[in-house]
Length: 357
Image (cartoon, rainbow, N blue to C red; front, side, top):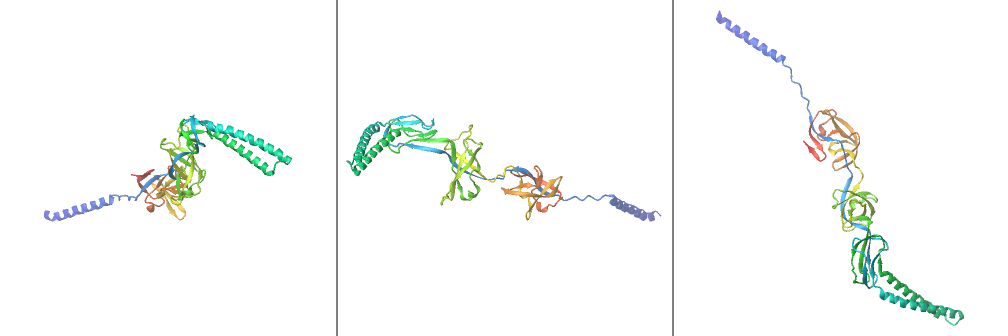
């Protein structure tokens, strides 16, 4: 009897175990389904300067300058100025020895006086019929020649006093007392430093980008980090046939704290189109459909597809004229996988100089 009960006990135990396993299986809840998140890069909506610019260097020079030379053969008696002296218009710069010309002038004046007397006497005789028409013309010619010689020598006396033709700075002095000078011998260089200019040479491809009176930025190695304001004063009319370059003249405004001088190297930055401090995003954040443009705005782990008005594009960035506000965030990668409302996972952030993890 005992032996016949064992199969029944084993069967009951196995049935109980099976039912327990089934019950446990039915009571365990199913795991929740995880939503797929699309990895994206994030870019902050900020302002940038999208103005097109290019830089050309040129030597700074005085717009108005004069190379003063001798107009006669003479010795230098006195030099009144040195390099760096500021002089007024008409100031005496040097005295040349003109005593020989003064002596010649006295003789020429005497000859001219005598010629005038002859002319007056000949006129009276001609009026009386005692002098011919030819004699009258000859006397008139000789009187005019004598007066001309007086005027020539008077000019030489004026040339002996070398004067400044305008207010400015003496930048070069080539003579000392005792030197002998001839016609066209260099004496001084006089410059005005109120108006300083640079004349950079630009490529013909830039011709359409520059206009007279356009503002430019000028910097000098002697004043690092200091911006000087300038403007295009004129554009020269010809292009060099070999270099394909043309020149513009840029006027530079002096700054009292940071004075500049002729000879400094001017680094001139030209701006083609003023797009300073415009709202912008990386061009990679845009989705274009024909003439329409969209971005995916990030908000609480999801994206909103939004239409925007795009302006200029430059250097990997696009101007946003409307549709976005400063400090909003947009997706800048994997845009093809995104749709309005997509869940996202930010794996990188775009800084001003590129992406970072």
